[in-house]
Image (cartoon, helix red, strand yellow):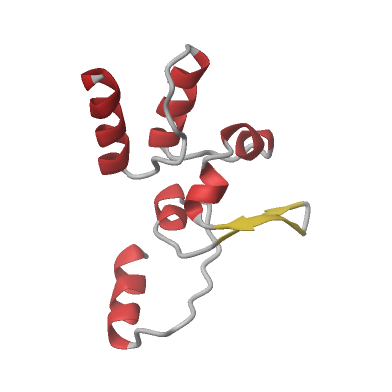
Amino acid sequence: MKTLIKKMRDIVPNITIVSITHDISEAVASDKVVVMNKGKVFATGTPKEIFSQVELVKSLSLDVPQTSEIAYELSKLGFNLSTEAISIDECAKQLYDFLKG
């Protein structure tokens, strides 16, 4: 699905695409995420804004990107990490910077 969306955006750059998914990697690649709960809009925002709210997202029985999950769990142990690092590169840089001191 991500490949199809990318090709559509390449062909028609200003196209609006609505995708209904439970696939985290698709949602993370979106410009905007709308979280529904019991048929109503529960939250809207960028993927970073939504998935950085780990407890809120999990309270709806939804998953967050593994990168957010790692930062969240390490934060609970006292490490000062941001759950906004939703890409692997962002998470790796954040962990490297933290360990580097």
